[in-house]
Length: 112
Figure 1 (cartoon, one colour):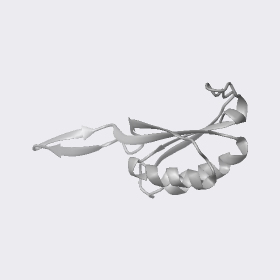
Figure 2 (tube, rainbow, N blue to C red):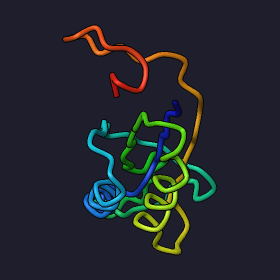
Figure 3 (cartoon, rainbow, N blue to C red):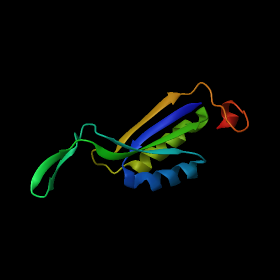
């Protein structure tokens, strides 16, 4: 099993969610996040004063899935989240040793 974590622009969330559903994924976890990468934030003007916004709003999506679905899910996220501009985000894939469904006690891929 693998865990995919994707950091994307907030306005792309619906497109990514729909793309993952089309691939056959049922459950995702979404967290509001703030951060920056190469873009290093930006400056804004507020009441005549200029200030730097270091942390930009992002959305973190987490999905745990079977190994055979990883490639399709990553490609779905990449295509749906891409704008072609700086700050589109990142996708991280890591191994998951065990999953346990709390309600039933199921383990492994059955618990996902």
